[in-house]
View 1 (cartoon, rainbow, N blue to C red):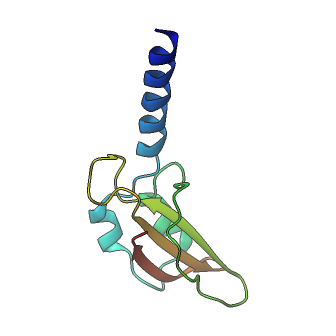
View 2 (cartoon, rainbow, N blue to C red):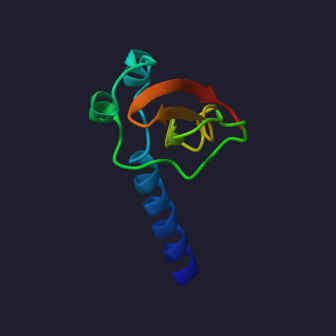
Length: 100
């Protein structure tokens, strides 16, 4: 009984946590290379996703990448997919939709 309750609580926490890293597809579609980070941050979720599909990140000085989930629904076909946004200093230099 305790195991089932704990398992249910963990699944609930995982779902809530994952939902805070979902970038709305409409917001993703509006992102453009060259935008300033302060403009991009207005549409980003509270946190990044822990799921990071394997893909080579852009190389270069001062480039950092952030990852946001496409969905928090583990039964959705897009589960595990992520949007990758890469910035050079404070300018958006690439946007990608990645699959595992």
